[in-house]
Length: 386
Ligand SMILES: *Cc1c(COP(=O)(O)O)cnc(C)c1O
Image 1 (cartoon, protein in one colour):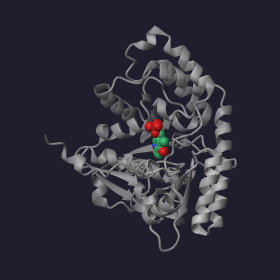
Image 2 (cartoon, protein in one colour; image 1 turned 180 degrees about the horizontal axis):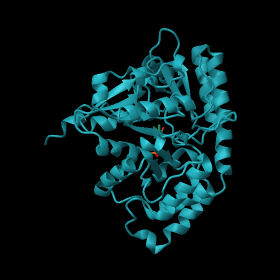
Image 3 (cartoon, protein in one colour; image 1 turned 30 degrees about the vertical axis):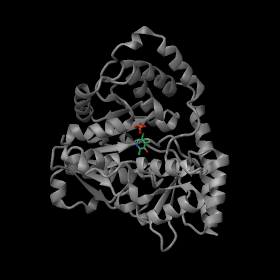
Image 4 (cartoon, protein in one colour; image 1 turned 180 degrees about the vertical axis):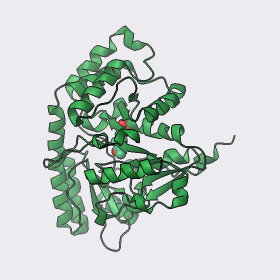
């Protein structure tokens, strides 16, 4: 049999490779600590689990869900956007439930991109922005992201011929993996650029709730004219430790939301209604659990930043996200340094090069490991590098 040519062009999914390395070492009996994957280690808050338990007993939840998500869920998303950001979106036309934001981001390509088209993705970013384009037989232009520019993707560098065939520009701040946060001025310039060049601006806001030191991440939809060209993705995965539940939503420009809805109508039948009920409990319930999570990650961030600086690795303490992005020592590449830590310290960190061409020279350390294991990893890294 012959698979689609676009599959041959897919780079192996970064995290699958790391899992395989970890499993091989563990099979040899090594005590490997993974600081690789950004998957919260603490459980979903109990009131959300209880809401799911009640929702699962309701027979009406056992049937096919509404394609766009239940109106109750979409209305809750609307209320949350208003209370969290002061943003108004219409639950009937401008909000769509997603089976995780990865699903929505991947399918956005199907809605907007034809073979040979271009998408603009940050040169350091979530692999799905470019992977979705490849699966659509489209091309990705990687917008430069430089440390001296605060890792804000430089869309002014996109060549005119690419721009003529570009459909979507992806951005995501607070940023995975760099931890960078965008300024309002940057968002305004990006919106003006997308309006001028007739691009959809897709903003991935998965980390807007995980902020430290008094920082409060915005929605791009707070900015003037954003609704003319922006769609924003919010996920419950990181804010409420719900990665396994697969629930998110997107909102913003009506035409974009409806186009994505059209693709989804033909490809999936929505998320289990009970999961949507649990998500309602998360978004409309007590938000203390989110504050507790931020306190946990802030403490871990400080541990890691302190340890990295002690061994002479430069890194900023991020104001948001669950990652520390660190420069590798002189003479090392992302891969060689990550391999050194894996082989000598049995600690997994993610090579920055796996996030795109701009990530070379960095590694990402995830804060989703229990404190005692994180301390042990930090101790081993210090020892290895001493
Ligand atoms: C974790 C993450 C998401 C969330 O994905 P889900 O599919 O909702 O779990 C989205 N974008 C980025 C950049 C992430 O790191």
